[in-house]
Length: 331
Image 1 (cartoon, rainbow, N blue to C red):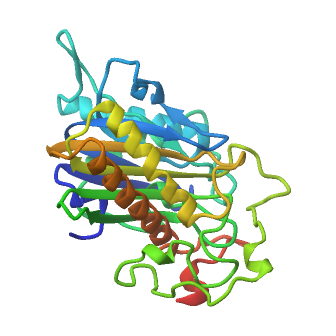
Image 2: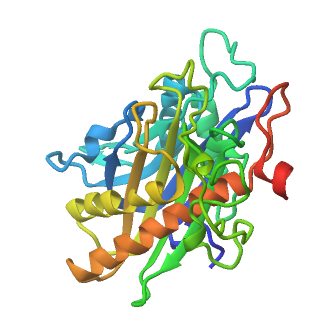
């Protein structure tokens, strides 16, 4: 296992980003349609085709998930991913037609210093196509793809990933785009809130401070004076090789999103658009009660690790006044 989302067989990840734009996109491609669910807890989400994942609706499986910068302009990323999938003959069968199912979500990176004067048409559809076409088993962490322009309250944000397995051998992996209004570190120190769940020093091995001061626990918000509900979001995709139904995938998404609270302080605020997608490739049976609970527990820990890795691996944007990366300060 490479500690990546692609440790789940049949899953590929592709990035496309633009340095001048200071933004990018990420496509999670499933080699075969995957059962999927969604959990939304942020106060300002930007979601594409989220309703298809409602338990009352017909379609159960998705072909891909599109994650993007660009706020609402980035919702066009899913159209680019769809276009690539359509060329491959993929999609939900409606008579002789095939309709690729690509839910997605966006983060707000429009005010990070990049050149967002793209003219009549934003570039995200083309970036989505390029990301889908580039999908493979290895991908950049930190400042890559949808995490390229991400920031947090005190350090550069980014894209992280992690994987794990339950004692029964069921695999689960997470990918997170960290553009949080809160902080992923304890105060301005080197310690990550997710430290209790770290494996093999994957985000620096600093542990937690010996004690917590009121200053460490004070609420810090990115751009608090001018922030809006659209400006801050953490997105995550959790994939497992367990056999799940659509309602069970929704439950997995709900349990797994508790990993946000283990890694970001504060979280799920009115200023956040936090969304987690859960998908299952349906290879290994699990107990529907105890097994699903255990899977959710491991998934939540894995999400927390992916969030910390996203900040740990990031590099600062090359603009005046840009936030430092964690490694700039402590690496």
